[in-house]
Length: 274
View 1 (cartoon, helix red, strand yellow):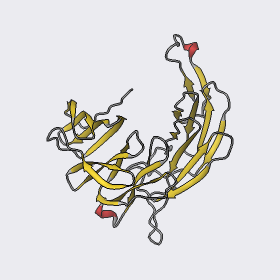
View 2 (tube, one colour):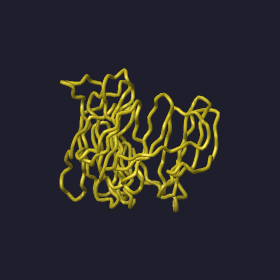
View 3 (cartoon, helix red, strand yellow):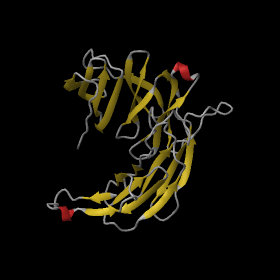
View 4 (spheres, rainbow, N blue to C red):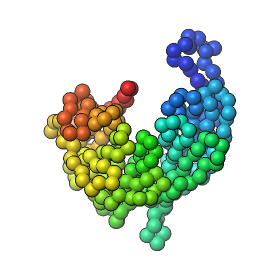
């Protein structure tokens, strides 16, 4: 079940409204204009207005994705900036299935317009298992960045791929060990990726350009992983994880920045509001 609360006006339990009754909810994603909510389950994607009207059920249906664990996989929704559509990437039913004739199982890329026309599969790509990294849509949903399997699995090699959101018009894939697409910039062109060889590296790239530049660390902190949220322009928040703990920084793509805090445990998290 999904409940709706107006954080500005709610003062009593009766100010909480039921958006969806028990058994009909899922992971939910507000549209940028705040007037609609998309919600996903293990097999469907639906949309409802925030005033509980115009429920559009089962806009996309798909088989349950095997997680090899007890939990169910719900695909994330990526809204368009004008709130008139969204996209999502749905992994194959068994992402660890062996390749057939050298072809790995494909992740489908769905476009869901909200003008009454049906959703459709815009394309499909071979990406690494979703538990490793999800496909990343640019803010305008025009491009995707992802990691494609490459070579023998035990070599931990991957191809960093940047393409249109239907999977076409790929930029030249970059083959690196443990490469991960990290974040799109707000200009829908720049992006940050990482790889390990075994040292951890962050790089800045641009769609359609082979030129990349390293993003230097502020301190000698030894990292093995990172979380990034791009805020605006060239500014992003970075949380590095390493054997000694974690380091949270406000960064610029030039490598300049300031350390916000350090932690003795790598099990840290953060969020931003702007």
